[in-house]
Amino acid sequence: MKLHEYQAKELFSRYGLPIPEGRLAKTPEKAMEHVGRRGFPIAIKAQVHTGGRGKSGGILIASNLEDAREAVYSIHGMTLHTAQTLGKGIKVNKLLLEKTIDIDREFYLSILPEPATASFLIIASAEGGMDIEEVAATQPEKILQIRVDPLLGLQAYQVRRMAFFLGLTGELLRPFSSLLKGLYQAVVENDLLLAEINPLALTVDGELFLVDAKAEVDANALFRQKEVAALYDSSEDDPLEVEARKHKLNYIRLDGNIGTIVNGAGLAMASMDIIQQAGAEPANFLDVGGGANEEMIASGFQILLSDPQVEAILINIFGGILRCDILATGVVEAARKTGLQLPVVVRMEGTNAEQGRKILAESGLDLISAEDIDDAVQKLREMAGSTGGGEGK
Image 1 (cartoon, one colour):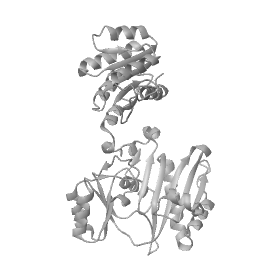
Image 2: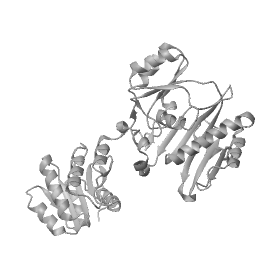
Image 3: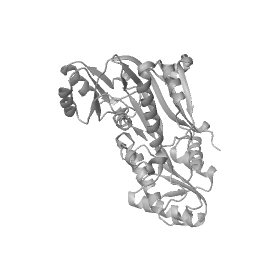
Image 4: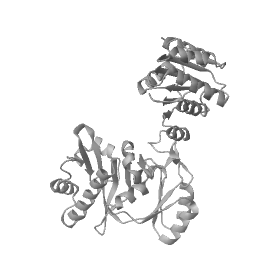
């Protein structure tokens, strides 16, 4: 779960990390109120879950009231496209207004768990403010990586090595040591998958500040991170994906025209291949899981029907814990409740498969049963009207 910049900074500030003075505003009017009280220059920053905001017009510096007004109204409400948004764009609904600082030098600093070595990886570079991937590719000698054994914790010699590599010696060693230890503690105590500071700035007055900050929390640990979990912002998520989470469904929206319902991630991937073999494209990844009940099946069905891109549906189930008769009952109920108009191909095998087929056949609904995978591909091909796009089986 990603945190916004203002949330990450608030979290890190609890560990004594220095952040510039700032204020969040959800409307342009509130933003201008803050600008009037804060003075100039001031940074106006879009709060969205993507990097590259500065290069895409999502961060502007205003030196007077007129510039600030223009910046606030141009950023708030804009759809921000960056190299990381993959052409979709993210609407900006919140702004962080932050006091600027006089920067002397900029650094890169991040900490993340590294499962392969069962350690925490600290990455630092004196080339802050740049894409660290570009630095790694072109100037790898300017990046230092240190691995921390979680059983031993961050050691003093590791902190000194990192500080000396960045050139933060003398009077700067103590504040950097406190900052790095605080950041490490924040990562460990909050189950962070990533804590990234870019840039970490050294001001002309010799102070360190987190000019930008990212944090991502391990979603599997949210059950024990109640306070952090409360920071979840669903405004940037697809509404159908948000609805699916409410019903404990694994759903990802895609760009195709054939909706799918399956049980099991492996079967989901296979079903997506089947759809492409039929010459169509999957509209989603929807795994109801092995323990799904009739209500979850019906909810998944309704979510698919809420997607205007879906032209037909493939249900591909291997009955185990989720019996085929339960699946069929859920499908029939959902179809009747929604007044189903789309063609639906149902392929089911496993526990109570015959009972499931009987329920579908006696429902009086236009639900198409497929005998096997090959039959499902053929029926999909026929109803999608796409005979020339796939190889078939």
